[in-house]
Length: 172
Image (cartoon, rainbow, N blue to C red; front, side, top):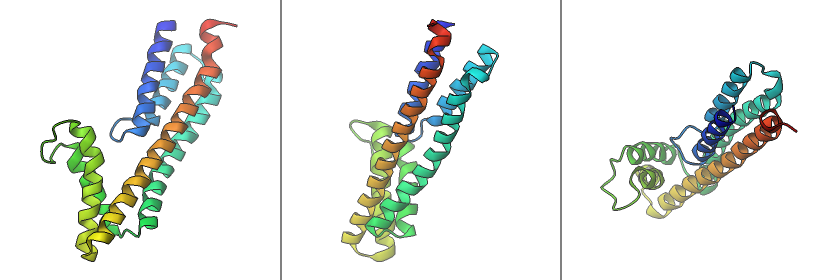
């Protein structure tokens, strides 16, 4: 049972990474791991606290994701065009449709794509490069801050799981 426990913890670490890096499952992967542990143990009573905490963290992560991008865009004065451009840029960067980058690949594309997309979208709206660049940077900074907050929430969920289940596996 210890091997399965550590495999689930490894899956949760991937979930923590996914909470920070877009396009990788995050908190939902942590929640799935907790549910698997409950199924394997045959009782959800022992994991009720981590299950509730992680469910709340999942909902908070969704809210943080939307709110951080929105607040970053609003603070920088971005329009809906900039936000749409950032989304399109993310998709284009993730799919690797940006010109070939010497290093980084899709991960770098996911960082550069939203910035370039937001700048282009905002420029199409306002025809002012200065405003467009400011809006693009604001959207990206908001998104990065949101992702870092999601990472911290994911770490908290995993810590609650470990504190709640460690004695089930190792006694004491």
